[in-house]
Image 1: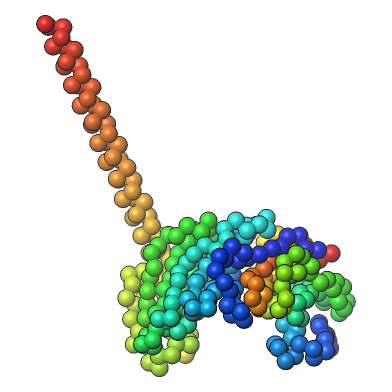
Image 2: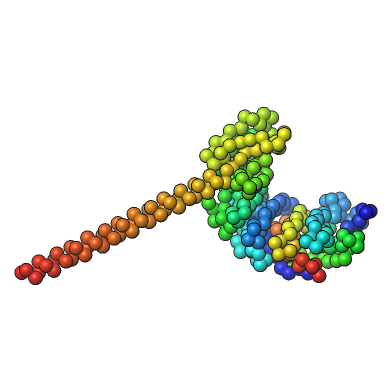
Length: 106
Length: 223
Protein backbone atom coordinates (compact mmCIF):
# COMPACT_ATOMS: atom_id res chain seq x y z
CA UNK A 1 0.00 0.00 0.00
CA UNK A 2 1.29 3.40 -0.88
CA UNK A 3 1.37 6.24 1.58
CA UNK A 4 -1.85 8.20 1.55
CA UNK A 5 -1.99 11.95 1.95
CA UNK A 6 -4.34 12.87 4.76
CA UNK A 7 -3.96 16.61 4.68
CA UNK A 8 -1.99 18.82 2.40
CA UNK A 9 -1.87 22.60 2.45
CA UNK A 10 0.40 25.35 1.31
CA UNK A 11 2.91 26.87 3.71
CA UNK A 12 0.74 29.76 4.79
CA UNK A 13 1.00 28.84 8.48
CA UNK A 14 4.37 27.20 8.38
CA UNK A 15 6.13 30.03 10.18
CA UNK A 16 3.81 29.84 13.17
CA UNK A 17 3.60 26.15 13.94
CA UNK A 18 4.01 22.76 12.35
CA UNK A 19 0.88 22.21 10.38
CA UNK A 20 -1.30 20.50 9.78
CA UNK A 21 -1.35 18.93 13.25
CA UNK A 22 -2.75 15.48 12.68
CA UNK A 23 -3.77 12.64 14.99
CA UNK A 24 -5.63 9.45 14.14
CA UNK A 25 -7.16 6.24 15.43
CA UNK A 26 -8.82 3.12 14.10
CA UNK A 27 -12.59 2.89 14.26
CA UNK A 28 -14.47 -0.26 15.21
CA UNK A 29 -15.33 -0.95 11.56
CA UNK A 30 -11.69 -0.84 10.55
CA UNK A 31 -11.77 2.60 8.99
CA UNK A 32 -9.29 5.23 10.11
CA UNK A 33 -10.30 8.48 11.70
CA UNK A 34 -8.02 11.49 11.51
CA UNK A 35 -8.35 14.99 12.79
CA UNK A 36 -6.06 17.75 11.73
CA UNK A 37 -5.79 21.35 12.75
CA UNK A 38 -4.71 23.97 10.32
CA UNK A 39 -4.79 27.41 11.85
CA UNK A 40 -8.40 27.98 12.81
CA UNK A 41 -9.72 24.95 10.93
CA UNK A 42 -10.47 21.73 12.78
CA UNK A 43 -11.08 19.04 10.20
CA UNK A 44 -11.84 15.37 10.54
CA UNK A 45 -11.35 12.75 7.89
CA UNK A 46 -12.54 9.18 7.68
CA UNK A 47 -10.32 7.02 5.58
CA UNK A 48 -11.69 3.79 4.19
CA UNK A 49 -8.81 1.44 4.80
CA UNK A 50 -10.21 -1.18 2.43
CA UNK A 51 -10.94 1.09 -0.50
CA UNK A 52 -7.86 3.20 0.29
CA UNK A 53 -9.62 6.50 -0.06
CA UNK A 54 -11.00 9.35 2.00
CA UNK A 55 -14.74 8.96 2.35
CA UNK A 56 -15.51 11.86 4.68
CA UNK A 57 -13.91 15.25 5.03
CA UNK A 58 -15.68 17.66 7.39
CA UNK A 59 -14.67 20.96 8.93
CA UNK A 60 -16.03 21.22 12.43
CA UNK A 61 -18.00 24.40 12.86
CA UNK A 62 -19.46 25.56 16.12
CA UNK A 63 -19.83 28.85 17.89
CA UNK A 64 -16.68 28.32 19.91
CA UNK A 65 -14.53 28.34 16.83
CA UNK A 66 -15.88 31.74 15.87
CA UNK A 67 -14.56 33.18 19.13
CA UNK A 68 -11.07 32.15 18.39
CA UNK A 69 -8.71 34.24 16.36
CA UNK A 70 -5.37 32.57 16.88
CA UNK A 71 -6.15 29.06 15.81
CA UNK A 72 -6.03 25.72 17.55
CA UNK A 73 -3.46 23.19 18.55
CA UNK A 74 -2.82 20.09 20.64
CA UNK A 75 -5.50 17.81 19.16
CA UNK A 76 -6.19 14.44 20.77
CA UNK A 77 -8.66 11.66 20.06
CA UNK A 78 -10.55 9.12 22.13
CA UNK A 79 -12.70 6.30 20.80
CA UNK A 80 -15.68 6.30 23.16
CA UNK A 81 -17.32 3.14 24.44
CA UNK A 82 -20.37 3.66 22.23
CA UNK A 83 -18.17 3.94 19.13
CA UNK A 84 -18.38 7.70 18.80
CA UNK A 85 -15.22 9.78 18.61
CA UNK A 86 -14.19 12.44 21.09
CA UNK A 87 -11.90 15.18 19.81
CA UNK A 88 -10.17 17.45 22.29
CA UNK A 89 -8.23 20.49 21.21
CA UNK A 90 -7.31 23.87 22.53
CA UNK A 91 -7.08 27.43 21.37
CA UNK A 92 -3.91 29.44 21.70
CA UNK A 93 -5.52 31.87 24.09
CA UNK A 94 -9.09 30.81 24.56
CA UNK A 95 -9.21 27.58 26.50
CA UNK A 96 -10.00 24.00 25.64
CA UNK A 97 -12.74 22.47 23.51
CA UNK A 98 -14.27 19.13 22.71
CA UNK A 99 -16.37 17.78 19.88
CA UNK A 100 -18.09 14.41 19.72
CA UNK A 101 -18.42 12.90 16.27
CA UNK A 102 -20.96 10.26 15.37
CA UNK A 103 -19.22 6.95 14.74
CA UNK A 104 -20.43 6.93 11.16
CA UNK A 105 -18.97 10.36 10.68
CA UNK A 106 -21.76 11.66 8.50
CA UNK B 1 -21.51 14.79 12.14
CA UNK B 2 -20.75 16.68 15.32
CA UNK B 3 -23.19 15.41 17.91
CA UNK B 4 -22.07 17.63 20.74
CA UNK B 5 -19.29 20.02 21.48
CA UNK B 6 -18.28 22.89 23.67
CA UNK B 7 -15.78 24.24 26.12
CA UNK B 8 -13.68 22.15 28.40
CA UNK B 9 -12.56 25.12 30.46
CA UNK B 10 -15.08 27.88 30.07
CA UNK B 11 -15.46 29.18 33.59
CA UNK B 12 -12.01 30.61 34.18
CA UNK B 13 -12.36 33.96 35.87
CA UNK B 14 -8.77 35.04 35.56
CA UNK B 15 -6.95 36.18 32.46
CA UNK B 16 -5.32 33.66 30.24
CA UNK B 17 -1.76 34.33 29.40
CA UNK B 18 -1.52 34.51 25.66
CA UNK B 19 0.27 31.64 24.00
CA UNK B 20 0.39 29.55 27.16
CA UNK B 21 -1.22 26.24 26.24
CA UNK B 22 -3.54 24.39 28.57
CA UNK B 23 -1.80 21.12 27.74
CA UNK B 24 -4.95 19.08 28.15
CA UNK B 25 -4.56 15.41 28.98
CA UNK B 26 -7.50 13.08 29.47
CA UNK B 27 -8.69 9.63 30.36
CA UNK B 28 -11.88 7.72 29.57
CA UNK B 29 -13.59 5.94 32.46
CA UNK B 30 -15.36 2.63 31.93
CA UNK B 31 -18.66 4.35 32.71
CA UNK B 32 -18.16 6.44 29.56
CA UNK B 33 -17.17 9.65 31.28
CA UNK B 34 -14.07 11.53 30.24
CA UNK B 35 -11.82 13.45 32.62
CA UNK B 36 -9.91 16.39 31.14
CA UNK B 37 -6.92 17.59 33.15
CA UNK B 38 -5.33 20.89 32.24
CA UNK B 39 -3.33 23.79 33.60
CA UNK B 40 -3.19 27.51 33.17
CA UNK B 41 -0.59 30.08 34.05
CA UNK B 42 -1.49 33.68 34.68
CA UNK B 43 0.57 36.75 33.88
CA UNK B 44 1.94 36.57 37.44
CA UNK B 45 3.26 33.09 36.72
CA UNK B 46 0.79 31.57 39.11
CA UNK B 47 -0.30 28.24 37.74
CA UNK B 48 -3.47 26.29 38.34
CA UNK B 49 -4.31 22.67 37.72
CA UNK B 50 -7.93 21.78 37.05
CA UNK B 51 -10.04 18.95 35.74
CA UNK B 52 -13.42 18.86 34.03
CA UNK B 53 -15.70 15.86 33.68
CA UNK B 54 -17.56 15.11 30.46
CA UNK B 55 -20.31 12.55 30.94
CA UNK B 56 -21.17 9.76 28.54
CA UNK B 57 -23.97 11.84 27.03
CA UNK B 58 -21.49 14.46 25.90
CA UNK B 59 -22.24 17.13 28.48
CA UNK B 60 -19.74 18.71 30.83
CA UNK B 61 -20.96 17.94 34.34
CA UNK B 62 -17.99 19.32 36.31
CA UNK B 63 -16.24 22.46 35.15
CA UNK B 64 -12.78 23.48 36.28
CA UNK B 65 -12.54 21.44 39.47
CA UNK B 66 -9.58 22.87 41.27
CA UNK B 67 -6.68 20.52 41.97
CA UNK B 68 -3.70 22.63 42.96
CA UNK B 69 -2.14 26.04 42.61
CA UNK B 70 1.55 26.61 42.32
CA UNK B 71 3.44 29.86 42.24
CA UNK B 72 6.86 30.86 41.03
CA UNK B 73 8.39 28.77 43.78
CA UNK B 74 8.18 26.06 41.21
CA UNK B 75 9.77 26.24 37.84
CA UNK B 76 7.44 23.90 36.05
CA UNK B 77 4.38 21.78 36.44
CA UNK B 78 3.94 18.41 34.77
CA UNK B 79 0.92 16.23 35.20
CA UNK B 80 -0.78 13.07 34.12
CA UNK B 81 -4.04 11.22 34.66
CA UNK B 82 -5.21 7.65 34.40
CA UNK B 83 -8.17 5.62 35.60
CA UNK B 84 -8.95 2.32 37.26
CA UNK B 85 -11.59 -0.18 36.21
CA UNK B 86 -13.91 0.91 39.04
CA UNK B 87 -14.08 4.40 37.49
CA UNK B 88 -11.86 6.01 40.09
CA UNK B 89 -9.00 8.01 38.67
CA UNK B 90 -5.56 9.14 39.73
CA UNK B 91 -4.06 12.57 39.09
CA UNK B 92 -0.28 12.87 39.35
CA UNK B 93 1.63 16.11 39.10
CA UNK B 94 5.24 17.00 39.45
CA UNK B 95 6.92 20.29 40.27
CA UNK B 96 10.45 21.52 40.57
CA UNK B 97 11.38 24.21 43.04
CA UNK B 98 14.07 26.86 42.96
CA UNK B 99 16.22 24.41 44.88
CA UNK B 100 15.88 22.05 41.92
CA UNK B 101 14.25 19.43 44.10
CA UNK B 102 11.57 17.65 42.17
CA UNK B 103 8.49 16.43 43.92
CA UNK B 104 5.62 14.41 42.59
CA UNK B 105 2.15 14.44 44.10
CA UNK B 106 -0.62 11.92 43.58
CA UNK B 107 -4.30 12.40 44.33
CA UNK B 108 -7.01 9.85 43.98
CA UNK B 109 -10.62 10.65 42.99
CA UNK B 110 -14.03 9.04 42.70
CA UNK B 111 -15.74 9.07 39.31
CA UNK B 112 -17.83 12.07 40.34
CA UNK B 113 -14.71 14.09 41.06
CA UNK B 114 -14.78 13.87 44.84
CA UNK B 115 -11.36 13.49 46.37
CA UNK B 116 -10.56 10.23 48.14
CA UNK B 117 -7.10 10.69 49.57
CA UNK B 118 -5.03 13.66 50.59
CA UNK B 119 -1.91 14.44 48.63
CA UNK B 120 0.83 11.89 48.54
CA UNK B 121 4.29 13.07 47.78
CA UNK B 122 7.51 11.54 46.64
CA UNK B 123 10.79 13.13 45.75
CA UNK B 124 12.63 13.18 42.48
CA UNK B 125 10.28 11.49 40.11
CA UNK B 126 8.81 12.53 36.83
CA UNK B 127 5.23 12.50 35.93
CA UNK B 128 3.49 10.04 33.68
CA UNK B 129 1.28 7.42 35.19
CA UNK B 130 0.40 3.98 33.93
CA UNK B 131 -2.23 1.94 35.69
CA UNK B 132 -2.19 -1.82 35.66
CA UNK B 133 -5.62 -2.98 36.72
CA UNK B 134 -4.53 -6.61 36.83
CA UNK B 135 -2.52 -6.00 39.97
CA UNK B 136 -4.13 -2.73 41.08
CA UNK B 137 -0.92 -0.79 40.86
CA UNK B 138 -0.20 2.62 39.45
CA UNK B 139 3.24 3.11 37.97
CA UNK B 140 4.65 6.60 37.83
CA UNK B 141 7.30 6.80 35.18
CA UNK B 142 10.59 8.11 36.46
CA UNK B 143 12.52 7.62 33.26
CA UNK B 144 12.97 11.33 32.57
CA UNK B 145 14.10 12.29 36.01
CA UNK B 146 16.81 14.91 36.16
CA UNK B 147 18.41 13.03 38.99
CA UNK B 148 21.31 11.09 37.57
CA UNK B 149 21.23 8.42 40.22
CA UNK B 150 17.58 7.67 40.35
CA UNK B 151 18.01 4.94 42.91
CA UNK B 152 18.53 7.64 45.53
CA UNK B 153 14.98 8.83 45.62
CA UNK B 154 12.87 7.85 48.57
CA UNK B 155 9.25 6.99 48.81
CA UNK B 156 8.28 9.05 51.78
CA UNK B 157 4.53 8.61 51.71
CA UNK B 158 2.84 5.59 53.16
CA UNK B 159 0.80 4.88 50.08
CA UNK B 160 3.84 4.81 47.86
CA UNK B 161 4.35 1.31 49.07
CA UNK B 162 7.32 0.25 47.04
CA UNK B 163 9.51 1.09 44.13
CA UNK B 164 10.76 -1.19 41.47
CA UNK B 165 12.58 -1.24 38.20
CA UNK B 166 9.98 -2.51 35.82
CA UNK B 167 11.90 -1.97 32.63
CA UNK B 168 15.55 -1.57 31.83
CA UNK B 169 16.57 2.04 32.12
CA UNK B 170 13.29 3.09 33.67
CA UNK B 171 12.38 3.54 37.28
CA UNK B 172 8.92 3.53 38.65
CA UNK B 173 7.25 4.47 41.86
CA UNK B 174 4.50 2.01 42.55
CA UNK B 175 1.32 3.11 44.19
CA UNK B 176 -0.50 0.16 45.57
CA UNK B 177 -4.12 0.68 44.76
CA UNK B 178 -5.31 -1.87 47.33
CA UNK B 179 -3.70 0.18 50.07
CA UNK B 180 -5.60 3.24 48.89
CA UNK B 181 -8.78 1.23 49.18
CA UNK B 182 -7.82 -0.09 52.59
CA UNK B 183 -7.24 3.44 53.85
CA UNK B 184 -10.59 4.54 52.48
CA UNK B 185 -12.28 1.51 54.01
CA UNK B 186 -10.67 2.20 57.37
CA UNK B 187 -11.99 5.75 57.21
CA UNK B 188 -15.46 4.39 56.53
CA UNK B 189 -15.27 2.01 59.49
CA UNK B 190 -14.23 4.85 61.79
CA UNK B 191 -17.09 6.97 60.47
CA UNK B 192 -19.50 4.10 61.13
CA UNK B 193 -18.23 3.63 64.68
CA UNK B 194 -18.60 7.35 65.34
CA UNK B 195 -22.15 7.21 63.99
CA UNK B 196 -23.07 4.31 66.31
CA UNK B 197 -21.49 6.12 69.25
CA UNK B 198 -23.42 9.29 68.51
CA UNK B 199 -26.68 7.34 68.18
CA UNK B 200 -26.00 5.66 71.50
CA UNK B 201 -25.36 8.99 73.21
CA UNK B 202 -28.58 10.41 71.77
CA UNK B 203 -30.48 7.32 72.88
CA UNK B 204 -28.96 7.54 76.33
CA UNK B 205 -29.94 11.19 76.67
CA UNK B 206 -33.50 10.43 75.64
CA UNK B 207 -33.73 7.41 77.93
CA UNK B 208 -32.52 9.37 80.92
CA UNK B 209 -34.95 12.16 80.22
CA UNK B 210 -37.89 9.77 80.05
CA UNK B 211 -36.90 8.12 83.32
CA UNK B 212 -36.66 11.47 85.08
CA UNK B 213 -40.08 12.46 83.77
CA UNK B 214 -41.63 9.23 85.07
CA UNK B 215 -40.16 9.82 88.51
CA UNK B 216 -41.71 13.25 88.76
CA UNK B 217 -45.17 11.95 87.92
CA UNK B 218 -44.85 9.26 90.58
CA UNK B 219 -43.96 11.80 93.21
CA UNK B 220 -47.00 13.90 92.33
CA UNK B 221 -49.27 10.89 92.65
CA UNK B 222 -47.97 10.12 96.13
CA UNK B 223 -48.61 13.64 97.34
